[in-house]
Image (cartoon, rainbow, N blue to C red; front, side):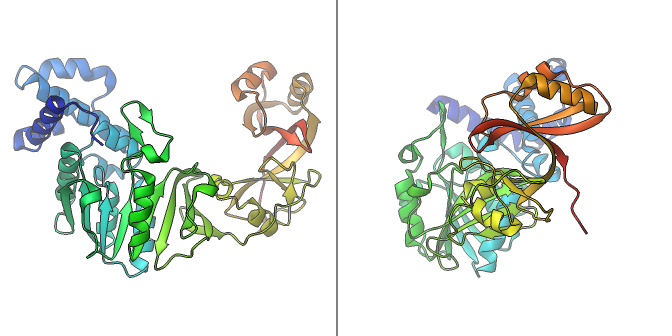
Length: 404
């Protein structure tokens, strides 16, 4: 999505082309890794030999590449080209590679990547051996995607087309991937029909394809998911990164799954009723965010032989330590009603100086609690601010050691 006025967009496109020249590339090499504190001095020096706007653009790309290293391998990020929105909206490489692998395993050999952005997903698809038509209506974004495909040696597999995705014929492709823009000039868009293109159009396009994947916000209400779709929530390193609706061949209508990366490890929904509430046992399990978003806490609890500490809180409690990729286990040593003075006294007795504060169902801010209890000592502990059977409660413990 283009948030720039036409004259600004043309200038940005001209600047990108200038950066792609040998002189522009040399300038990018010179500013690589420039620290923010050094930017002014570097810019002043370089403007003696280069156009000021080109120097500013090169330094801007250096900043964006540094930010992009959180999502892309460093070897890619330092060579690719980015826009601010492109960095913000790009899929993390590990997640894009997982999705591309799932499509490849379904026998997909060609994909129409609609709303391709700066090309992160197209790159993952191409590296999985899939031919890609990457489409974006913004001239600058399409140009950046084209430059990235060439820069990474994937131009033979990625065709970038500047066009309105609603007007592109995708019938000759094995699959469709749609990633509607969920940010605009004023930030994040919460109304799905205000996406670009609207979610209803994206669902229609996906449902009409032989195989399709539609990337959506992880917070989508389950009741808004079409009955024909399989819904998958994906986390990477414990952070929920996306939800994907799968349509057509290789998907199961109405199915729900949570996939955890690295791995992948996938927990599939079995339609279990909510687990019952039981007293806090020796172990507390914190389900992965993808498990919670997918509403699969019951499936995780059954695997652990546990129950909930409260009907509205996604913490599982059990008496046994069981290894699971779907939750992080803690051994609970103390349970006390919410009382800062009692917690401070207990931490002093245990000589706890490193305190990790987790909360679910509590309005207390972790930093505020740390200031009040003033932890001091050589030991470490984790405190959970939560509810147990409806009552505000503090649970003290530490990461559990799993058997075997």
